[in-house]
Amino acid sequence: MDLSGRISNPIDRSNFLVHHYRKQIGKQDYKKTKSVLKATRLKAEAKKTAPGIRDVTLIIAAIVILLVAIYGFFYLKFTTEVDLDPDLDEN
Image 1 (cartoon, rainbow, N blue to C red):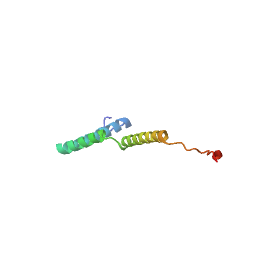
Image 2: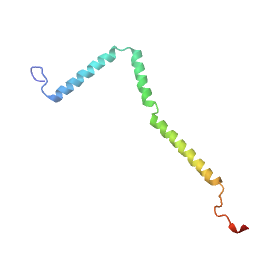
Image 3: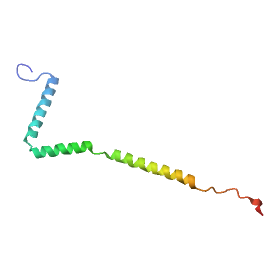
Image 4: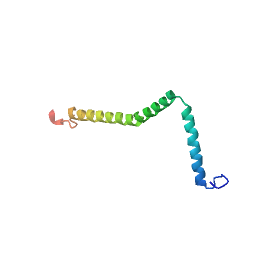
């Protein structure tokens, strides 16, 4: 700040504006009741710990791939071979 009370440096001005904004937000949070603040905090914690849809999708995809692999293994193991070259000399 210069002697007239104005902010001359743009960096100082942006820091002042950020500080002023944070101060206003702090006043608003202070006015809220404890139950509202607790509910907000619990909601934020639940959002952090909740498994995402991506995680659930990856787990389901892994299970499906495993089941298909097991099915394919048993299908190939227990199928009987068909003789495609019949003997024509059996008359």
